[in-house]
Image (cartoon, rainbow, N blue to C red):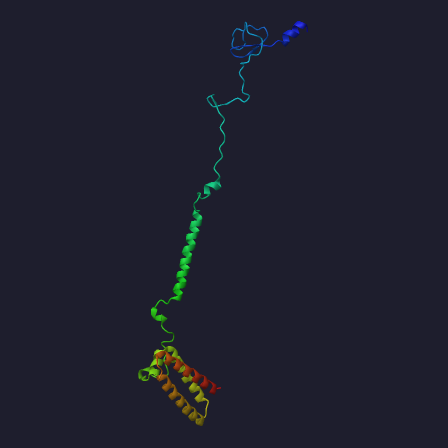
Amino acid sequence: MTMGDENTDSAAPTICSKCGTQNKVGARFCRSCGASLAGLPESTPTHVPQVDSQPQQLSAHGSAYPTRTETQPPDATSANSPPAGGFNPIVLVLLAFLVVIGTVVGYVIWQRRVPANPQQAAPAQISAKPSFDCTKARTPTEKLICSDGDLALLERSMVSAYNQAMGKRSMEQRKTLRREHVQWFKEYARTCDAAGSENERKECVTRYLTNRTSELTALSH
């Protein structure tokens, strides 16, 4: 290689001013567009367009279009989440269900505690009958016992204890017990008939009948 060859190889190629194509040193016409290269300096022009290293994608018709960014689908949890400041519909349904159940249970309990017939709220054992005939009741004490089921039960219990005590005694003992019982009955009737009010009379009858029943029951053992 001669000195002239080194100068030729080191010389800058000729750049076409129209299309920017690099041509061989000494070429007179551009090999790309055919423009004349006469009079152009053999140096790289400053206006050479920069080529994008990443070519644009082409559509089916050959036109360039920008690359689309893939959009992510909405989060499934955000779609099911309640709106801001609102309530979850499932929670509202559960609350309504609990309210209905509580109402039904409360109504059932109330129905069991309240009698269906107001007459059922009357004193218990009101249908109980004493040992004597109430159609022949004359004294205030007898009338009170006939109108009160609790007192009627006490009177029947006392009479039953008296009969049991009489059944376990001899003939002479029966006479003695009968005299004692008549004396007790007179005091009981006189005291309770003289009571000032129905409540006092009821307390008197309850006390006399309860005590006498205990005494007669003790005699039976």
